[in-house]
Length: 299
Image (tube, rainbow, N blue to C red; front, side, top):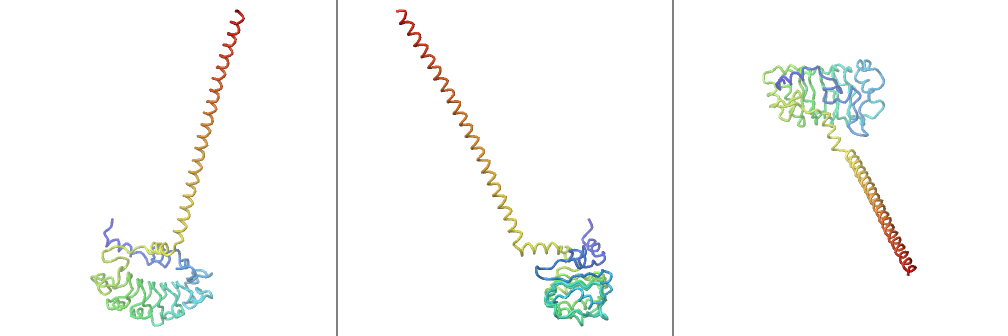
């Protein structure tokens, strides 16, 4: 088995997965197939155009396509991967997306956050394979509640650039793989020191333990939040118990019936035996009476 450091390199040496692909923290199918975070809430829908057409589309049109005439406030997750930004700026995304919790803008040519709207509920932000080299301080202003940030494959070179993320107090997972900063001496130790709130850097903690699979976490959360599965299980268990009790009752009835039949047979046999004995007694009495009559005739 490879040592932890080699495991980390092998894991991170893979190409950055597109959101929804296996290996992504948000695996759940291909882009546009991930299910809503909660019932009654919507994520963007890929629409009918082909994937190639969507990938060549500018960001503003892509957002319109993903909305499909729905209210932006209904969208909890939005995937804009491989669309074209407007001169390196976010285009078409507004502060009307008040419920947005997950945003993915992978490989859109992004260079700045100047036009990123305020997204107070955003928790997970995918920005891999862009041209970002700075202005990270704007993230704490626009997205103060981020817990996961993927900046892999960008042009981040200095620790001072990452230092701007100190104000993201809820940030737990940061990905800088394939950025020049990773070649710095004691890179990991320095980042963990600068950002004490971060637990996982490039998918591993300070002890080289890999971050847990978020899909499994989501399933656990769903199981904890909803009492439906537990209730259904209880109902099935009750049905099984009822069935067992019915089966036991039926078996008991059969045993009792069998015992009754045996008792009746025994009683019939006893009656037959008693009748036989009485018959023999009558026969003997008749014989005795016949003998007495013969004796009287002789006299």
